[in-house]
Image 1 (cartoon, one colour):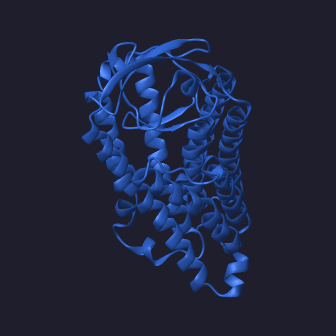
Image 2 (cartoon, rainbow, N blue to C red; image 1 turned 135 degrees about the vertical axis):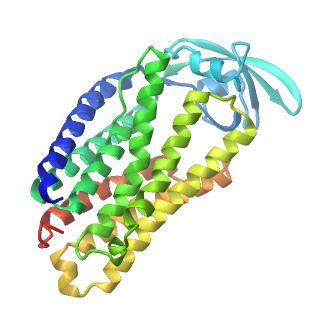
Image 3 (cartoon, rainbow, N blue to C red; image 1 turned 90 degrees about the horizontal axis):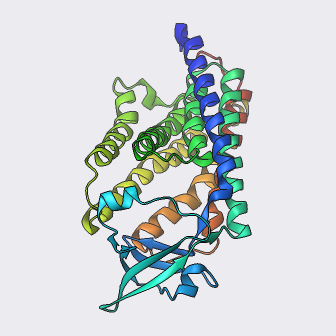
Length: 336
């Protein structure tokens, strides 16, 4: 970080403050979330909750959603311009079931207590990401601390959310910024592991930075182009995007797991203790493996629901805690 330490630190503080404010506004908006009681993949219903608005309306797994209030769901303009649902709103869903088209009305309800609680737990995890990232860079002005702090901001803001914006253009801009930060956060996560003492040999490569960040940047650009072009949501495009995201997550989370396993295995006992590699190791294994499994299963078998999968995201709280403690308590010099 050298002469730019102060500038980088101030950047982290500024970003954290901005997303903390937006996050608190997002928290206040949780009460406005609505519940329909079904999940879908490529507009095909994959799950219907019991005693939910969807089940009461007669929805079944396998229904292919064709229209909402008479408008084609695959039409990008229709999908993006539809108003936000409110508790008590009713929408007519036109579906195809075994080749027979039918329509049923779904009346949106408030979030069930368990879902509402999970949303608030997710927000709290996002706050932990932000706080631990800022705390780590306050304690240690190192490359690993910088990458971890930026990773914490990227993931933290995605967990905490933001206020709803009436303007479609503003929603697109904020959504693109948020998604780009999340994608870059994957690279920052790997970077934090690679640059944490003892530095991985990969960091000595002349093109290490390009290899680390180019995939995330390219995917961010791809999604920004999609937002600008606003193509219709065809099955081919949806499938391509689903698999692209799955491989992206596998690439970076897989890299993170392999990197920490290699670093931990190659370090002697003293090095492990001095740099708190055990904390980082278990944070990665427990925090990422369940998510990886869930992502692969949901992409390849969208109708399969793993036991307890709604709670898998909670394990990710170990990552900011484990990384923050490991980086802050490491005995390595700040220059590393």
